[in-house]
Length: 180
Image (cartoon, rainbow, N blue to C red):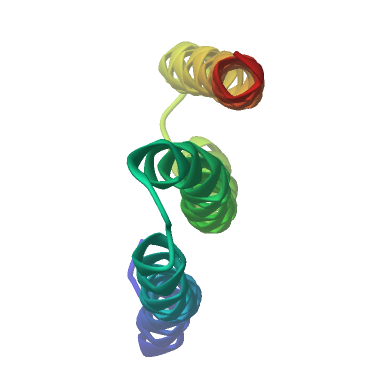
């Protein structure tokens, strides 16, 4: 059994396509993070100017302290929104990387099973047991990979729920402090 130039070319093309998909996902994530960060810096700068002007206009210490408390709430909410946005981009990028990896694993499995079928057709009598054992091991590996993928997705969903709950807790604490 020989590897043909067409097979090498197809494998190389598939590897380059996978690499380009990962590069596109990384660039997209970087672009989104840059936009989020630029927006956050611009907003923080504008808020600091407005807050400084408001604090400079305070007539006494009590008004100054009151303004500080009032101005802290939007900053906390913006920090939470920024964190959620960054987390969202990271989750999205992770999903893209997972899709590429899953496609590559599926292609590899398909090619490997095809190779095993070709080998089993050209192998001596009695070797079908060894081929069946390898196919069984491959099936077990695929099942383990599928379980790992499911557990990872569940862990991601739990983490997202925890981030949402933590965000709500911080908002609630900030509102309670403001009311007090």
